Image 1 (cartoon, rainbow, N blue to C red):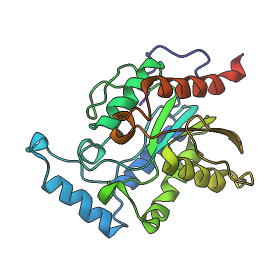
Image 2 (image 1 turned 180 degrees about the vertical axis):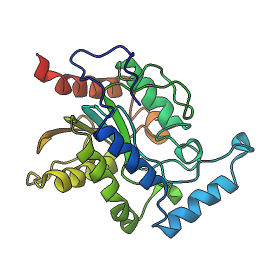
Image 3 (image 1 turned 30 degrees about the horizontal axis):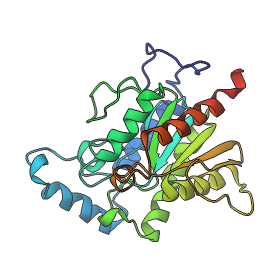
Length: 249
């Protein structure tokens, strides 16, 4: 979580250690205990039991992965799901895989993280004014949850967003994250514009009390092919910071 001694971004709110932070911790415990989707439970445990050679001998988390970051965050990033040998191994969202390597390096360049790497819990990483989460909390086969699994998991994101009381900007990492963010906003705010805003890289829409931004997902498929570059990610995060801090002039 957020380190009160860490340097603050301009206009950054004071860290919240009571109320919403305590509730987020309780929600995280509830998430990690979930076994509601038999297919996902079986897959996350199979991945842990049969790791690739590079991770052989490591103890896997092999449970649902809660969101993580600054409880006073004004920027919320919403991804798809943990990777079988990333978050499912390390226990932290977007941690231990190439997508996370790209994402946390970008957060560091933007001043939202104190270091460019995220390897596992307890590695010294601190997030400032940003919270990172996912639409689905267990690693799905082929990185593709089915609609029933998506819908069963959705209330966790809805409740996280309601507890992130300072959130002003939501960044959908890929079309799946964008759509999950829209559903979460509808669940917490009750209103969506019609027609629904369409996903695209650098797409921007005002949805209820939030600004929703889109970016291509930082998957290897996108970053290795150049569909998503560091400069593109930096521009979206810069816009998120600009929007989140606009009230301070």
